[in-house]
Length: 197
Image (cartoon, rainbow, N blue to C red; front, side, top):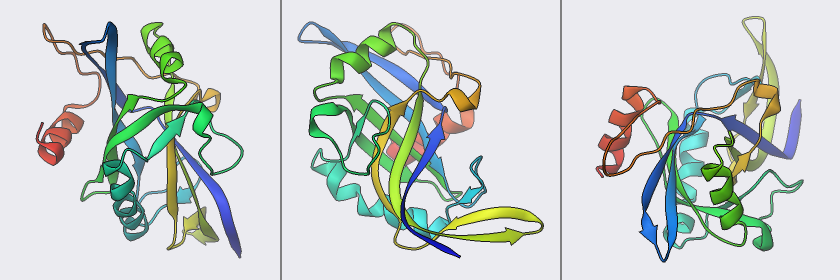
């Protein structure tokens, strides 16, 4: 059975926040971390095949380069970006060989100050991909799986509050005096290898 062009949302809470230098009187931030994972069944029983996710990540590179791959605070009901509700832009996004999609976002747009306020107040939040595509339901080894089919399109990466997860990520800040990583060392190593600074 196929479900056509549904909005597909995925949550992640594996990220770190880097506190940057003050720019024009305001502290700037970078949010780095895991945005999605391919090749495994996620908590929504959804499976993004490696090639499907790789193609979607490759397709947004031009948008990232043009400062046009954006996100909002919370998911809207449709895949379209609301220009008056943008809170950040994605500056880097790639997929590792084992299917982990990692990226970087910075506050930007009309809701930039609201996102900065959330960060500075220490409020926990999740990162969530928003995309559109077709799915196929199946049972594999007795488990229900919803497989995302070729043609999946990443539309945005949003900042969300995820009450269903039951936990909030730890906010990690980095400045010039010290560095604290709450994410696994492996992520730090992957980031340094993939983006090389």
